Image (cartoon, rainbow, N blue to C red; front, top):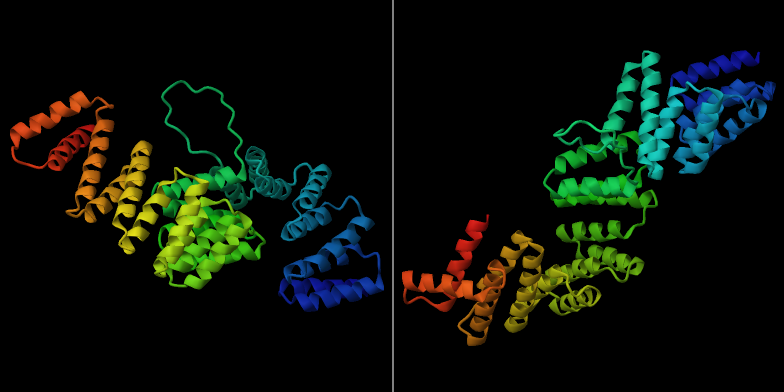
Length: 421
């Protein structure tokens, strides 16, 4: 009789009537408390209905009844992964492989778990083993899926210019892997980075760090609502990292939610009070709100933490400009330009110079400062040898008499930079 309830439970589970299936399996168990198959199937029904803890309970009973049940260990590993019990899930997978050394799905799952722990090389080895076993079992689709996982984790191949040597693949941590994706986005390959992150989340929809990383990339391309959704999901999965609050704050600011943005950045500063990036981000929000005094305080605090942080000087210069404190603005712009020049960050360097040129007036002090900025630029371009610079300036004076000193300096700089690039 209990087989009848059991079979009806299987039918209802196949129809995705999980509540009905659980009721049938429960009746079968009541008639036979040692009916391990009914516990196993009820566990699957609980799992599919989202009742993960009840599923684990049923798998525990199966394992007590039969310690050689590879299925029970495998399904409990999946449930433990859903509960974020990575060590427990890994322990169960190891038992599965010990029971059945050719269990392809177990190697596949162990690859996912090792990747989450940051052991990328070990994850690749497990995905390779799973792919081989799936192929032997003529499961081409799952084998191809494992190969795609390997491809995503391996570093890009470099062009072969010399005979191939056997070099071990470097092990990179999960944080380093996500940093590679952010670097890819920074270099303009945002869609490729998002595609990689979509793949990671398809493999493991509970990967909070992947949601955070995708949110950062979404911010870079201006998809602020999508970015906020990703950051919200990361927080729901208990990934309370300062990068989430800092970047969600930036996104909320872009959408005009200044109070929400300030709330996020205040939370970030509670978590990491010595983060100059957060002070600059909060300063930018204050500036957008028209509160330049608070903005300047935050930029100044960022510079106390990192006195060589060019964005803090640049943004403080913007705030001083809005307050019409021109001398302070010029001083900050000059400092930012100097740092960007030393870093060879030419795009930001030019942006700062453009701001400097915009606020130049007939004020002699400011004009003198402009001359000094140009002179320093020229000195760097000629390696500090002022005699060479003077000869180049003299050539320009001979070719274009009657121009200002600033004009001659700018002319020489333009020619040298043009030749340089």
